[in-house]
Image (cartoon, rainbow, N blue to C red; front, side, top):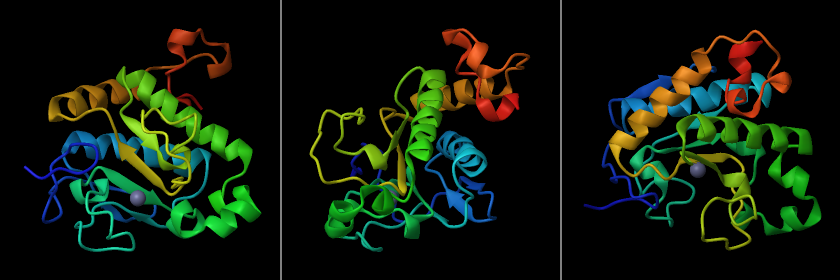
Length: 203
Ligand SMILES: [Zn+2]
C-alpha cells in the first residue's frame, strides 16, 4: 500500500471524517480520531496563538503548491496548513528566512513558545508524539531523528508516531479526556502530572 511520509495510507480522494474549523472550513482527517486530534489542536491555536483564517488539510499527492513532494502527509489527510499565507515554507523562501527569521516564520517568540506548549500538551496527554509542528522541522526541537536544517514549514502540523488507527484512537481519547478534566487551579500551580490539563479547558 502506498503510504505518505508518516506511514499512513495515501488516499486518492478526501476521506469521510472531517472537523469544522473555527473559520467554518471543513477539514478532512484520515479517520475520526485523526480529525479529533487536529480539531483540538486547531481550537487551541485559534484561541491562544492566532485566529484561524485559512486552513487546508487533505490534498491528493499530485495537486498543490508542493506537489513535488509526492509523499506529503496532506495526501493521507494527516496534516494541516494553518494560515499558510503568513507562515512561509523555508525551502521556497530562503532569502526571507535569511533576512528576518521571525518575519518569515510569521510568529513572534511568545507565539512560537505557545505553539510548542500546545503541541507538548497534546503529546503528553496522548502519551507519545502524536503531533509534530513543521516550524521545528530540522531543528533541535524536532522529535524526528531526521534533522536536516532548512526545511522549516511553520504553517504545517502533522500526525506523527501513530502509524496505526488504534494508536490514533487511544491518543484522541486521551486528548479528549485531558481537555475535559475539571480544573480548579491555574495551570501554572498544578503539579507536572496535571499540566496536561489543557489550558483552554481551564480558563
Ligand atoms: Zn503542509
